[in-house]
Image (cartoon, rainbow, N blue to C red; front, side, top):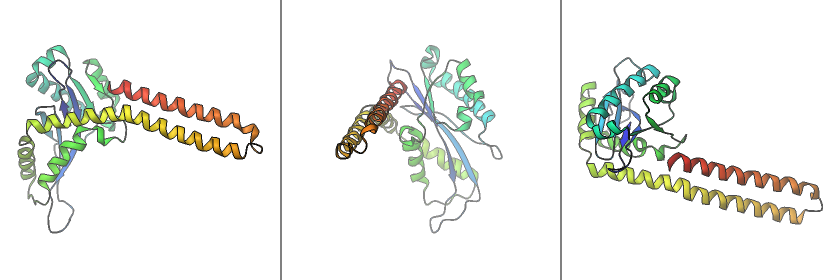
Length: 240
């Protein structure tokens, strides 16, 4: 899980992710005897809240609702300016516990702005492309003998991440959003124009055979173009 703040006059964005941290062995891969699930919320300067999933519990709707309640309290204490003006935003993925009615209703009742996360887009989730790979690389190849050792080492590495790294993470996120809206639109237009050109060439050759079908193919091309424009419009409304 993670938190992001843009700048002093802009709305903070809180992004969310959950990761399993398991004991590992360097010589050969073996199934871990225990795992620890860690949830982390961070913004562009540091971590604002973290917690470990209690043993025996799962991340269901009820548990994630409790996490949201603790997160709000952490933001109130550590980001009082953003809390008073209600100018912080939450970004989390589309996991069932995140998108459940129970959680969505809670966030709506407390006027918490939630940024939608496009499905199957880990490249737009700071926890996936920045935080957890960084933690994984520091723990890789180490054998930890207890749950407490996993927690201690994980937190030590989490706290060692510098402010500059968090800032660079969200600069990268902004660039990726822009690529999705600008370059994505250009990519779709190029593909559609290429597709249209190939079809027109095909029907120029076989027009006598397929004369009555020309109108259908142009309608299909037009429909594809409308759909591409609609998808681009959705992305722009989502992020800007």
